[in-house]
Length: 123
Picture (tube, rainbow, N blue to C red):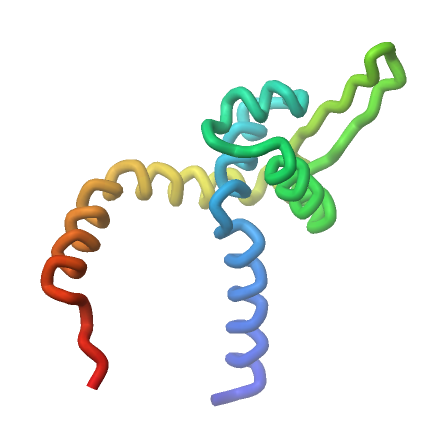
C-alpha cells in the first residue's frame, strides 16, 4: 500500500460518510430543485424529525455544501440552498438516489433470503 492510496481511501471514506447518511442525500436532492425554507424541507422529506433535519443541515453547511440565509423579518425567515460546491454533488447524489429507488426491491429480496437461510454463519 502506498501513502497516496491510503490518503485517497481516507478522503473517499470521509466524503462518503458525509453524504452517505440516511438524510443528507434527500436534503441535497431536494435543494437541487432550488432554495427552500426549513419547514418546506421537513414537509418534503418523509420521516425526518426536526432535530435530525437541523443536524443534517448544520453538517452540510459546515462542509460547505449548503448555505443558510437569514432574513430579519417577523417571523424570521431562514432559507437553505446548495452552494456551488453542493451543486457539483447534486448529479452523483441524484444518480445514487435513482439507483436506490430502482433496486430497493432487489436489495430487500436479498436481505430476506439471507435472513431465511440464517445468514453467514460464523466459523
